[in-house]
Length: 234
Image (cartoon, rainbow, N blue to C red):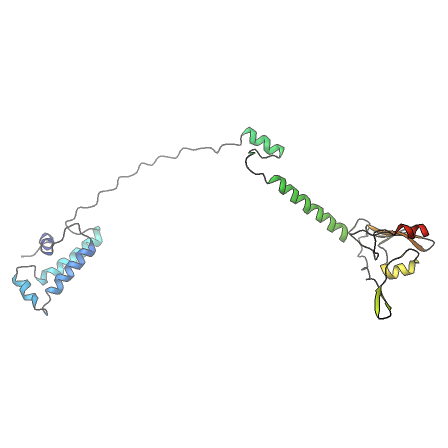
């Protein structure tokens, strides 16, 4: 008589809803016990249990059934999942800006006074960056400079005085040739005035009588303008 799964579960002492791992462990233990090489296999056969020749096909059949249906033979099938009713999501239009926020945005203000506004610091940073860009442009390309490349301004010459080198500086009363040797050729000539970007030198009777040294284009002088005593002495 061929054994069925109900007899198999009863003999192994397992439920029909046990897990696959539990089923495998119990069946393998019983198969090892009924192996012909073991002494207790004869006692198992005499006890009237399922013979090994029927146990192995039942074990393999149960595994195939589980792979196909996801449960062991005789176990209740899992309840079918209820289909979920799908309803179209209501279309919600994003709220538009409130009149207060729109007015504040047009006026360049933050509508929420409790929230720290970044508009002020950002505008200040942009203003500083613009100012630095203008200064850099003025230094590199002042309006009075011609579009042709200007000759580089020569460094102040060092005149040996004993064992120490002294850097020549512009002084009141210097002639034009000495000034040219120290400061270099002007970027623009306007009568008696030599223009070096925002800085300038002024001559009378071929002698230097006044100057203005801008930080954007410093002249070879120690002061931005000549000391008053020197101009009065002249």
